[in-house]
Image 1 (cartoon, rainbow, N blue to C red):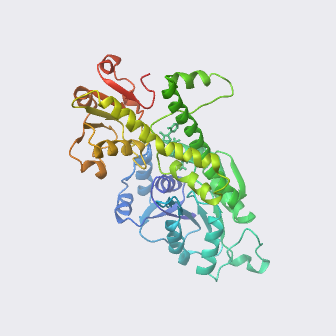
Image 2: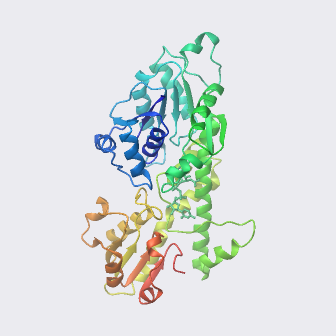
Length: 418
Ligand code: SAJ
């Protein structure tokens, strides 16, 4: 049975660990948070993902999955710790460096190291450099030179295989999506291909590490740019008195047009960050990508202006904010534009705020410290509010009766009720 050691048991690492254990690999999960380690060993998923609870339970009970604070010797190491950006929008790969330092003592000749985290271009080569320094008894391949025959038995393999899953569909997409495999050298690409072939039914494309790094960044920037286009259209439409949702629907009836949905901004752990990685790598050349990012970043402020304008109609505005997560039908609050909007309304003391978010049990700390905010259920929120703001298109909000909304002033940032 092949041994896999996965570092970072979060939104990607935990579902991947559970899936691999279910496929018969012996999986050792590593996380630096003892609460996460404890939860995994008790087969309690600390994140919400459809199907994960059952899969984790059977993985742990089968004995194929266990977690600890430290890595172990393994045939395959998978890095799924987060990459970040600083407040100045510079790439921060400190967690990856830490993970590489953590696994270094456990590497043995022939093992395969896979980086699934989205990273700036050149990171895999940087990792090869760190590994060469940490383990000069091993041969770490590079993109520019081939491993000499004499060194083959001391060689380890290294590849960047960026995850591509959409939270909420992780377990399906881990198996069904095609993947791009970027070997630091040809043999590393082939080794990684053999591994993914065992549980992925989507197509597997082998390339080099740099191309794989930029491919992943390009995918997310493509989406960011296209959402920015939709968001810019919504600003233009508002200015010209045109309903943007009708406009998008009509334009999309053209066979070669597919405009995405405008919204209250772009959130999640990936899209707001990845365009900055490209901008940082090629500052003078990433003009559209950078402009799009700036447009998406300013959208929450535009929504706040709209809400304040409507709230000004009331002496005592009571604002029901529907949805707080970064996108629909998830409990994921990371980089949520809805949170930014609500926080600003609280800071500016715009009315009393009622939050309706069926996917959470308590408000995040940044909001809970204010006294003019309350987490309520849908019925209470709709009864008490005079202004209703739809921030996230959760399915549960679809069926709110038109007769109820007719009695309220409404800001629908997702075009759900129009
Ligand atoms: N959004 C809009 N309008 C749209 C689509 C999305 O405003 O038409 C907003 C969402 O509300 C959300 C944000 O964009 O705030 C991001 O949502 P998303 O569904 O576009 O993307 P993520 O962040 O959940 O997942 C993305 C995916 N990348 C692509 O679709 C190219 C996923 O496949 C990646 O694996 C993931 O980033 C990642 O981990 O990088």
